[in-house]
Amino acid sequence: MMHFYSHGKFLLTSEYLVLKGALALALPLKLGQSLDCEQFETNENQLSWDAFNPDGHWFSAVFDKKDFSIKHTDDEAKAKKLAEILKAIKSLNHNAFEGNDLHFVTKLDFNPQWGLGSSSTLVANLAQWAKVNPYELLKLTFGGSGYDIACASAQQPILYQIVGEKPMNQPVEFNPPFADKLYFVYQGQKQSSANEVGKFQNRVVQIDMQDEIDAVSEISRSLVTCTDFDAFCSFLQIHEDVVASCIGRETLKTKFTDFQG
Image (cartoon, rainbow, N blue to C red):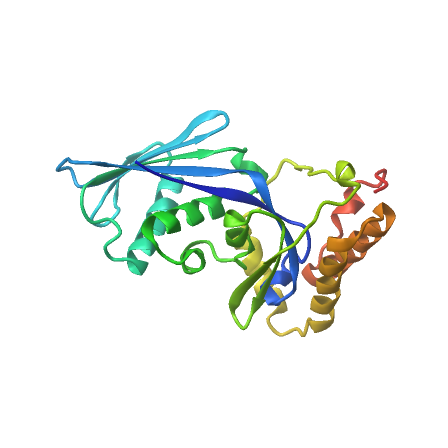
């Protein structure tokens, strides 16, 4: 049996603007997703899949290994997306699925609705298994900047940037003395990353955003070494104002008017 594991992700700065070349501060998580693959000497020529999250079994499917048509599944939408990913893998490595029948088992450490990288960890794990470039696989499937793919294998926080269409990342030390005051709040509604990326790209296609890119990039650098909590909050407030103006929305903090921090 082959075993793979990838870390989840958290993007602290340069949301959306990382797509335009801004420097982003991103954190790999202790939580992630594992993938196990086992071969079976059968003549059914199929690929089977079982996925688990913290609540238990949440998805299963069986595919024809030749064309990845769905033989049966308990979630048609998930199966169709997975079939797309498998086809993309085959386009990158034609021999990836040759040989015996395959059974994949994935185990997610967090609720998939939290947006912590259920898709990126899957892509990263499958790319390792198939020996293909994870960034190319991401481009063919979910799209995005690729910072989440960088986090999947990172062992510490990173500064991430797309330079000349190439992903670049630098490990950094980020452990502020006020880490116990930083929280992740799930609002109860996960956005589709692919849809939101598409909306942003359409909105800014004709707009020069270099000033905004420079501003959030400088904030990313500053946060890495910031040791003062009030200064940290000020940096993030400026960052949120810049991003809000770029995407045409109010800052999230306006929904929490009684929160000071």
